[in-house]
Length: 247
Image (cartoon, rainbow, N blue to C red; front, side):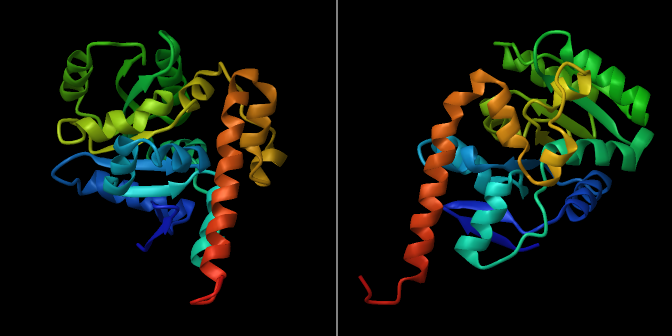
């Protein structure tokens, strides 16, 4: 699998089917430590410029997929490669659950108290996955959570803890007793039925992020990062096209 660099951060050139096959392979033939999957987006790229921990997590993750259409655009603009589609966690999870069913043991970690339980129940009822454990994302005692995961021994650890999910996984990946761990943002809320995904037309056009921002004032503070990302990509593209010695 080829990995390219976008604004100092990695992106693997993989489509959805390739990502699903990769995860299933890692579950069937696990690494000595937990394999981390990050679904990167423009916000993560901007944050990584100022957050060394997130930058390390990105580069040391075993799989980095393009969550947003902005990443697909940036890969084409800055590297000349073409990603056939974005590969967000909102697509990976349901497709993986449907693909593996009862062969997959899942630990749900994140969201508000009670939400992970509902998400786990719905996933078990709909796809037949085995629920190994659940825990909300509002905790201060990380050791207790790590012990719960160790006891559960899940195939897949699903983490929905916002901006801290990827660094949490990275910080503990040698101790996480899961074969694969993936940060999924608000997808636990979606699985629980507490949040609806954007309309299908927005998903197909890669505009799900815009619908989420427009419909939730709490997300408006994230818009400056998207503008900064676009500016960085355009600036990087101009630099890439500038001939040697040009001004």
